[in-house]
Image 1 (spheres, helix red, strand yellow):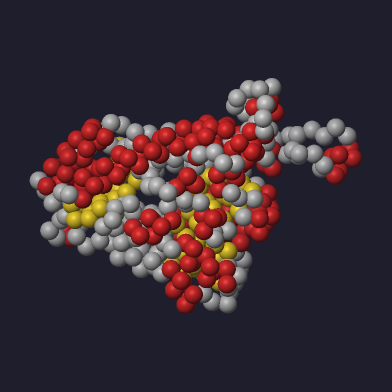
Image 2 (spheres, helix red, strand yellow):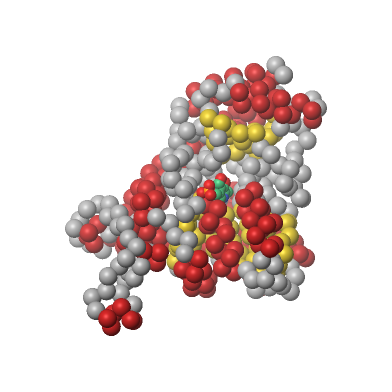
Amino acid sequence: MNEKKSFLASAGPNTLLAHIGNDPMDYHGFVNPPVVHASTVLFPNAATMESRAQKYTYGTRGTPTTDALCEAIDALEGSAGTIVVPSGLAAVTVPFLAFLSAGDHALIVDSVYFPTRNFCDTMLKRLGVSVEYYDPMIGAGIESLIKPNTKLVHTEAPGSNTFEMQDIRAISTVAHRHGCVVTMDNTWATPLYFKPLDHGVDISIHASTKYPSGHSDILLGTVSANAAHWEPLKEANITLGICGSPDDSYQILRGLRTMGVRLDRHQESALYIARWLEEREDVARVLHPALPSFPGHELWKRDFAGSSGIFSFVLKAESKDRFKAKAHAFLDALSLFGLGYSWGGYESLALHVGLSDRKICAAPSEGPVLRLQIGLEDVADIRKDIEAGLAAAKAV
Ligand SMILES: Cc1ncc(COP(=O)(O)O)c(C=O)c1O
């Protein structure tokens, strides 16, 4: 057989997803890797035990199964190395602990995933790190917020729930000029639609719980680093002992194989629903970066190769005291959509977005914000269900 690696170097994204990670010939030709459950790893003799000069030494430091996933993620991200951690939230907290120390200052985007903010405002503060939130649209203007002790700039684009875009290249360039590490939560786009390391980011963070899993049944996170940041990230992972399990890693690798075709469908249906909602007179605004009407659209068009299946819309309401009643009427009238947190699975989900945590990004004033995860169901059924929700909200 010819060398597969060189073929894959110029292959398309779905071909890559089908073939990256494990090499079947490393394990008797079986297409999928074995799930190796391990704490103990044996050494052949005392000298090897002392030098640890073998590939695997202990379960927390990687197994053939977690390595298969890490290698697949490195191929997608273009990273020097990847760690696997037990949740998407841990994929944020582990690099923060790796690169921040007492006395440091961190800049965090204000449209950040709320549990990231909670970690910063509680544990990071307790450990002596000061945290400041910045406007997602700040771009190169972030320079004015950088202090001599600023060590980390965290980005997330689009932002959680309200989908603000960020000029990742401009922010990274300025941050690097001041010696800061740039991290990015890229869960929304996946490396298929945006490759953070190609845009200057040092650490790319993913909740694999979402699209890589695709089935709402696994919690896992990956953190991928460029060459300059790989050693300290790996070291922090080993020091903290926060490692993902082989079973979950296997399931995420399995999910990756179909992620491209699933994302195509999520993208197509979400765009159809977003455009349809935008035309309705009971909808004030649709918060979806791939719509030309969205303020960050030009950045999305410049940098991203696609859009995934989650966005929000603002339902029109006459006065603020009706926001909650209208939002609840919409949600309670849904049959197909589940009311649940998370996203990236095969099924449609909806929730009423709370924005009281925001310090800079003002919540929309026209009405309640409703977030939709558009699943893999037939789009006519998805639309029919939303129509029922909108009719119920209108009656409030
Ligand atoms: C943007 C983003 N990052 C990280 C996470 C955390 O993922 P997990 O649920 O696996 O902790 C989520 C979960 O909703 C998320 O939306």
